[in-house]
Image 1 (tube, one colour):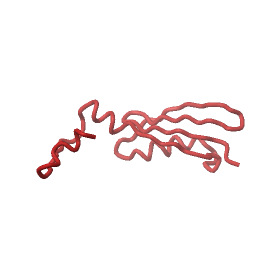
Image 2 (image 1 turned 90 degrees about the vertical axis):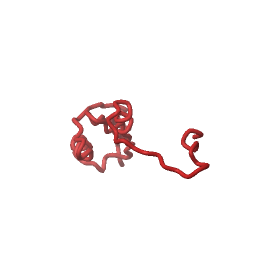
Image 3 (image 1 turned 120 degrees about the horizontal axis):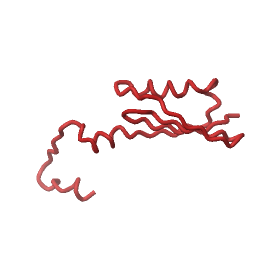
Length: 93
């Protein structure tokens, strides 16, 4: 039976991990450097901590890359183009 619940957050600088052992009730937290050009590398590096990945029962994944890009104003310039009558849709949401 699978033992671990794992949370992963991929950020711009670090990929954060939280694992919960359902048998021993232990929580472990660690960080790996993120690789912005290939975010999966940071995830795979963190998963290497497990001898057997089939011991992971569930993985919850999130990312703060987009949030950080917005907060730091590092995103791409975009334009919103619409037809008459739809100009206020993004602001209504």
